[in-house]
Length: 99
Ligand SMILES: [Zn+2]
Image (cartoon, rainbow, N blue to C red; front, side, top):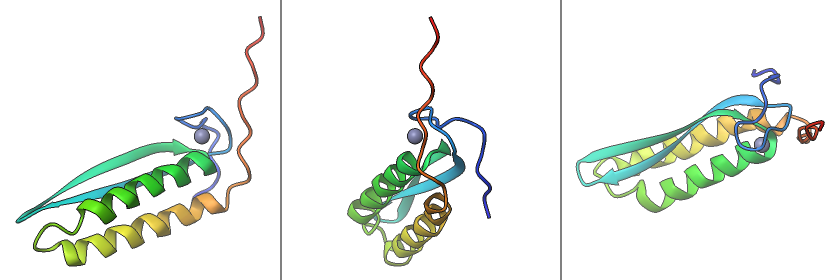
């Protein structure tokens, strides 16, 4: 289990976050190309990153010989990882800077 992190969200700066990695898969006939999105994400930004990775994989993951197997594995793996984000409380935006 991932514990909430004190590192601010890499996208919006909110807390709490969890360190996450999502994979987007592209099949190209005989090969597969993987693109990784890694970082500290608050719940909302992490779920958005997971959605983008899964949407890309759904569109482009199937187009290789092994895509019929690699695509569902990638989608399931991303979904399982994102389960940790659902356990995080609602993100709290960073306090405005003092002048
Ligand atoms: Zn965020």
